[in-house]
Image 1 (cartoon, one colour):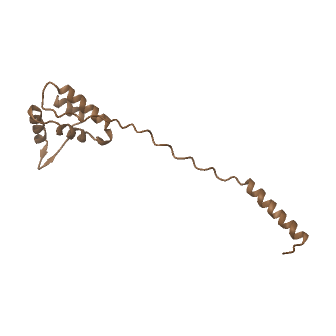
Image 2 (cartoon, one colour; image 1 turned 90 degrees about the vertical axis):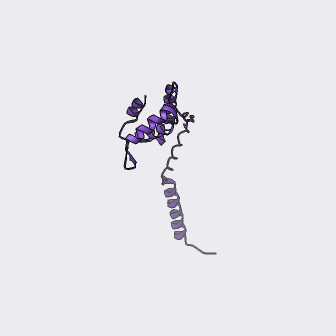
Image 3 (cartoon, helix red, strand yellow; image 1 turned 180 degrees about the horizontal axis):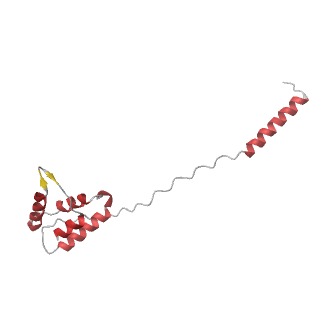
Length: 126
């Protein structure tokens, strides 16, 4: 067993007391705030528009297109995406003929150029 002098014992006791005091006075940095919870999923599931052949159900088709694009806006960031989407649903009948003419008039050397806004396109399509 080690033998300490009275002075060494006093010095050690003071060092321990000082260390304990400092440990109690040290304010650890607060824990970082937890990251915000992701927003609840607001993914709305809407049916894709029905194919349109040209007829009296134009307003129904137009409404279906607008609903689908609104519910999937992250996929339709530019007007050209919206226009191509609508063109892909114009199948058969007068609608297909109109779509073919629209594409043919805007295709030069194999490249289709879409300069219209989506609203202009829909007005022209009406």
